[in-house]
Length: 575
Image 1 (tube, helix red, strand yellow):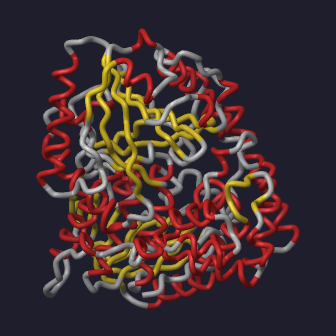
Image 2 (tube, one colour; image 1 turned 90 degrees about the vertical axis):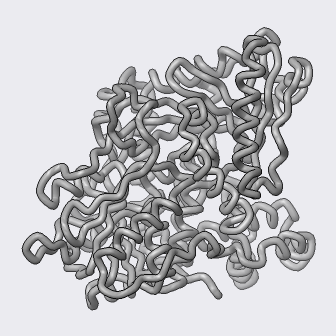
């Protein structure tokens, strides 16, 4: 089945369809959970619409640690069920659902005292055993114990006095925003109507029953009604805001917790494995990411601006101080290429520390016709979606089939293994270097045919993007024509990772990228320059915020950038 083409025409058609008929399910929120709900529902034969106030995955779902993992630290909290569930999902994502997007990655766990070896070893053994018991460890080596000398050969950047030995284990990683987009494209392929830059501004009611949503197209300012038998709120950290729209805080309370990550060049840390460190507050990962390392994260309460959480100087110094405690050659702020901050939607509990709040999810029916889903973790999105649609089924007349998403490959996955084996042939036929084909396969899977066809028609698209030569010009054009990108920031921050992977955070690439998008979207010169100006202003204020000492000061600075949508600003809107 050919994946849906989510270009501008698709959005127009989706809006018309959502306004013109009663849906079975309307999903509010285009992050990983909302995308998962849409796919689960449409795969059960329901008519589905999805609206997202900004870009897909523009909140939490593009700002994670980019790991697909069971959550090794949850074993210490004796949360065996959460770990077991996550390991099942890790196996499905690696081997069936998205082998093109999810890749194995090793981690080194340094031991600082000899007595830690049996304790840590027992935990990692249980981790591997839980995964093996479900038969989903194919491609992931068993953990191994290392002496100090062996550990330093794997991770030469460590100080010798920082460890007495180590344990190495394996998990997996993913480009979180690209995965969300692929889930949405898969849902659209099966008939879901998907539209970004559309905000839910209220609910339609018949008595106590929610019968849909009042929506605003933020690109035009037009308001319209979307009728639906059931509405699913998958708004993450905006869950409480949605509940207030139906008259009170309701049954689910979400506490945002901010996590920041730093991106540094690969040559700044000499190692062939990722690293996991315990800190006084949670854990710190050093994660291999192409030609870079991702280092994070923090875990602090956040009660300020939700759409653009700011990283402060204090946050950045905290991460640097913790990683430098074990490195032979310390990192400095001058080594930091990129910084990003995200909010975890934690369910509130009795703990005053956000790092100890539950990562398990909850589904609630606060009023008839409205389902709320919150909590959880990225890795278990599919289970969350299944549970939400199970709740939807109770509110619909007739028999609703069971979920099938555990055996439904995502767009680009079907036939991927064979195409991966043909990458030398693809390189010869396309004239691209084999490393470029590898890069494209791991981002698009079998949908690489579409991007290769674009390059065949326009050979200039085979050239690297000026200022960001890890990416081809074709990837920018493809993002606008096929992947629902409507603004320059959508491409530089989420369809690619140029905004965090280049020293200038995408400034040098911005004008060429805007022109490539404009070719696909019919932008005028004035529109192109407006997009570039907006992007550059956003980077300017983010950099300035990162020089501020605390959250309040950083947040105040970050408000200095305007929103790109021409209608009323949506900085406080639900996404």
